[in-house]
Amino acid sequence: MRLIRPASLFAFLLVALLLAGCGEKPAYKQQSYVFGTLVEISIQGEDEDKAKRVAAQVLKDFDELHRTLHAWEPGTLERINGILAHAEPGKPARAALPPGLIPIIEDATRFAVQSEHLFNPAIGNLVRLWGFHADNYEPDIPPGGEIERLVQARPRMTDIRIDGLMFEGGNPAVRIDLGGYAKGYALDLAAAYLRGQGVKNALVNIGGNIMALGRHGDRPWRVGIQHPRRAGAIATLDLRDGEAIGTSGDYQRYFLVDETRYCHLIDPRTGWPVQGVQAVTVLTRGDKAGVLSDVASKPLFIAGAAGWRDMARRMGIGQALFIAGDGRVRVTAPLASRLNWEDNGATPTVVP
Image 1 (cartoon, rainbow, N blue to C red):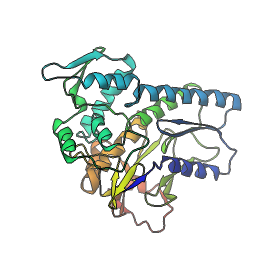
Image 2: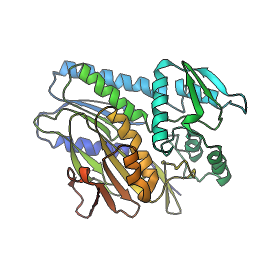
Image 3: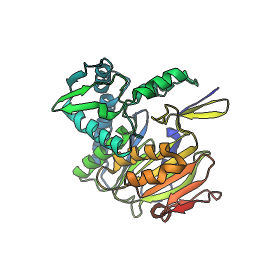
Image 4: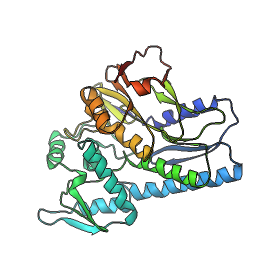
């Protein structure tokens, strides 16, 4: 058995290295550790006092959001999960929701339905069973009976009903884990705040989930797409104003047992970590670009080689890159035209 630590720090450093080589006047930067990963705010073209103030506020907002949405530590979401766990047949759990959490749960539910529940934040108990809820997890496969019990309970976001400020849940197997949503939501919040403060050029990087505003001096913000099996980028990309990019990979949080890789991305249909996929990257823009970049990569990853393209269409994703378990690369035509391939061994297949 072998335990593998998260690779989000390396993804972060990859982006930082690309930015350092741009040649323009350095952007003002602030860093923190939030959402279980390294976060950096880069602001270009503002005086240092203003850049320092707005970056600090963004990081403060991130910290508050993290405490609110953390599924495993004392806070708002943990309290709700505790209430949901006490639901009984014919006696649903019922309690008040903080107003700010209502649109988040409703939005996550819409994405769950859109993805045919492959994006399923209600499977927090499966995440915990596999140990991926903790920073320090053990390379251990759970009992098959426990996995099957949770799969048969069919926890879904649609098990939660919201009426005004009240929520009701009748499935005690539901445990909400917004880890696949919160970083994207934070990107959208940061972008709205920065624009509201008159900041036109910035890059917000939450462990490799990235949102771009404006430009880096006289050129676009350039980021790298992490190679899933070795150090460095498989490709680079110039982000346009308002675009967000997100990647799900089996190299971020995983462990090996008898040389089989078990990653943190769990298929709700089977209760087991997805195999046969190395990474999925999506590029989004427009309303809720951050959330969509975070959410959409998950159902594409879970859908696998046979279903990722149809799932991309279902999620409204036109620009996506899929790397199969054997290393074969497929990329949609709109994204292929914008990528600069750094890996000479990559032979991508372009799909409509």
